[in-house]
Image (cartoon, rainbow, N blue to C red):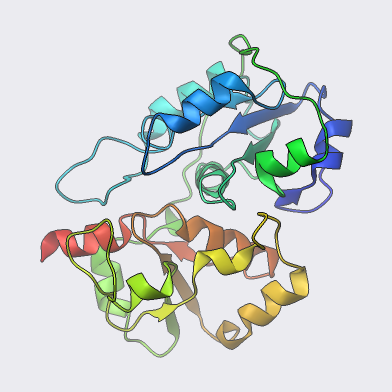
Length: 273
């Protein structure tokens, strides 16, 4: 059904828009204005798509530890997917945003974490869809009737203690996905402490796509990660475990399949300071 493993084109989606085994999710979101994504969705979205909110659906309630966007409760999230017509192991899920995969990749990673491999991100996102003159609507789809029974892939994540114990090992690569200025501690617009986890190397997540939100060619993805080919373990983090998923998507498209996420990321790391 897919035209590539983790990325599909607007053309492919348009040609398969009414396929009964496809579910589309709008993941648009703004950290600066948390209501904006839902408002954009209500005004105009790809036909048939449901909306998933980063704070309310793709994350759980903020606690003292666990980072700014803790992973959602598995059972609650599975129930939402079921109500939106997703059948575990069967439905092909397509996620899109307008932020260079920042939030769509969170859904892509979450589904794989729950054992559902049939998921891809829309190349170019909503803006690319609109630029191609494909249809949009303000119609909200009715509830679906899926059955999503997750099978958690616990090996895909690591906690703070694991990062602490293995970050300096020569065979481990710890990847900071934030912008260079945040990694270097020059600026910190969100978290209370600036800097990075000691031993981490910087691969900014925005280097995965071009300025229009299209995945850079596979060879560029492969070249980007070439220095990590001999690492036995790769751990990826960002500020709160969201944009790190863009790097995980890039790693996957480069043929590196065992990279892990530190979900709490920098915001969890510093919560113990």
